[in-house]
Image (cartoon, one colour):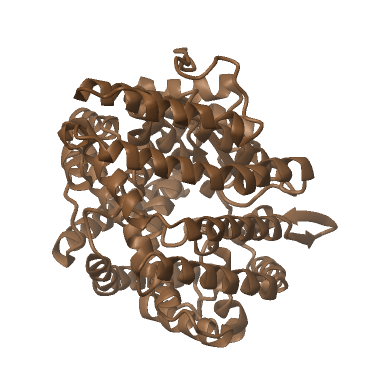
Length: 583
């Protein structure tokens, strides 16, 4: 097994530990005092700052990881809150002063575009948007996000005398027993509805804070401010609206076809929201693993079939203990891959309960992990952190590419085919949800004075725009109006969601290349990820052999390809079932 060694420190003392910001301030002072007489001196300064940046990022990473692993542990919560409240505000100020210093140097403009293009663009953007009065607003937003995580992390469902997390209970939504699915759906929905008022309070406060932040920075609304703040140098708000329109025009009819087939295969006269996760090809839910240890072992075996580096990535993380996979009470919801900049090896967090969605999450986060490994030796730490349009390209492509190794999860050929069919169905079905969440956020922040009922009404209108009416919510209207609250991005990381849609299109194109020529397709995928953020998004996509394009014709070609692959798998499944039925 290859070992990825933690990077040695050259600027910071080897054993330095952050206890308060006063201990870190002298290093920022030192960075601003060095003599800069040529471009190479500036590059040396940037390298020292990269080491400092890596240390601070990893310090925060561990505080966040430890907190999300056990949200009801006060010591962990306090450690994370301390960084946010005491370290972060001072850090923002020092980073701003350092950026002012670097950009004022005559050699800043002489830094070569390769690899410094986005370093220069991001530095200038930081100066453009920085406002001292926004620092406490950011702290308040983070505190509210932490409160949201604690609320949803504590949700539990009682079933047959057992207390289940929402993630554990959701596994029953794949059960062929429709009455059981309905029972669980109602229990989960009631549990979520029971905290609706608390989450409404949090979003009300978030919107007010974010709107003020935008006004302080000279913007009319937070939507326009955040689009700029996210560093979307390569596309505009108008391009995002084109994405919305393309989804409505091209992806919604595909969703309609999928739902009509589901309704027919399940033999139902009406589809309800608890009918959307059960597999339509069998009366038994897929069971690819039992516990997290088995999921990890099978994922390593899966990755080994695709590429040696992919396997070594998971093995190195396992050796370091950088995975927390099983769901439990008190653990924050969701899943993530958190880069650890000093180690150069990330941490994977998720809430596995033994179902197929967990496999998808594992290979998705594994794609992020491979990306981290491929970028670990880039000289500028900030350029290891790609915008999500690139980061999610890594993970969502891995979901599709890794299907060639999914026989490690399933010894039964029919189960393997069912798993791949589910994956392609979700690939086609996810775009309407992404457009719904993103469009809703556009509405939230361009109507900042709205009331709660108006907000829920807007959610329903937007949901109905992008989603098929074949799913009947007639008896579940209050749950439909509350659906937005389960999407943590809306509360915690505003406007970070359209990237999944952009990257999904890119991932389909990467997979299409891989299917056409596995060796060349995989090579270009890895080459693109190795660039980190040293080039523009369109150029990184070009390196992967794909286009950065939201147009209806391009998207239709991608979805038609997936549909043809889905039909092929369905035919193979039907043939297999026919061959195994006794004559």
